[in-house]
View (spheres, rainbow, N blue to C red):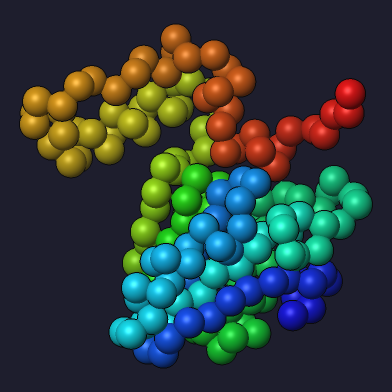
Length: 173
């Protein structure tokens, strides 16, 4: 479908309350095929290829790869499919996209399913504070689980993580 100025590929399975699934960086809608099949008897499972990934169009201009634009791609997809409210799930960058979508359109998100993702902090202190807050609110630290890594000791290139994915400049060798 032509959405937000580009061709966006998507798949739908089943009927019922919508579950919209977003893949991580370098992946595609196929990541969700097993889950979508499992959900299809009760839910309307929608997965899509983000701009620049697999079957969706890849604009030449780097300025067309901001997280704000990707959130608008997701909104345009939901509008195109008549989805006013859904469960939004994502893995890695897709989870970050779901978080940003919820931040901008909370009324359109019934629930979030986040896998291997976080809020995209660009500094180790912010990331560590977020991790500590999640652990303290979940009671995980009292459950005898190992302590999370000290993010201040993890190289900056790694802690930039998802936030750096769209903010980084493309380089060629």
